[in-house]
Length: 244
Image (tube, rainbow, N blue to C red; front, side, top):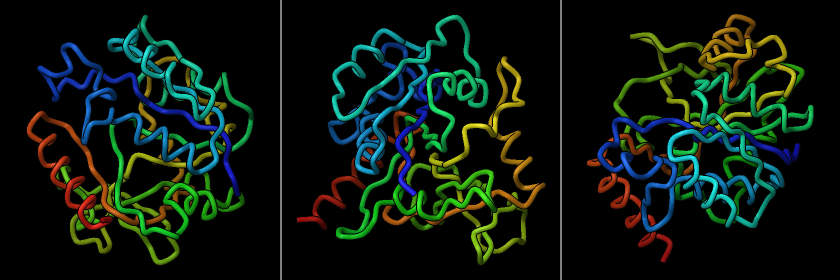
């Protein structure tokens, strides 16, 4: 399956990254000389996406100016200047601008490097994995040994077929949600119009046996604090040396 549309969640305040985010929105903080959101945009474009909706709130004018210069796909702004809608509410509002077809949903401040050359990308693999007959949500997940900057808390346990359960102590095969997923547009038809967390729909999918995960290849990076920027740039430099 090729998915042509996406929603990028980019409206957060980035409070743990202060004082940098006092003047710069977190998705525009540069890692390896590039704004974090550009890693997500390029990954989506490489996977065949032609239209993405991006929600904005914190330093929204900076976000709009930056996004206007990205020319690899059509970008529509979902404006949350009047109030943050959290991950679920932000997605619900953004869906108004997209076709009633499956879509990627990505966080703007999480990305990965080191995908094996000559192989399908993580997003393309996720699209091939997604089966709407069996799944409400298919998410990209990362093994603990493939990540930098994370707090160490595991999100899910992944089964042999990719089925996911909330992780509890003693469970095997722990993974972390890597900030990219696929879902059908209609999944949120019953969602409220105000702010809510998308985790509600993760739990609904688990209860129905319809939350699945695909393991990420390469190395996943999250940048939550100013100190994490240096760690992330070290990883980027290491992978750049390997690629040479």
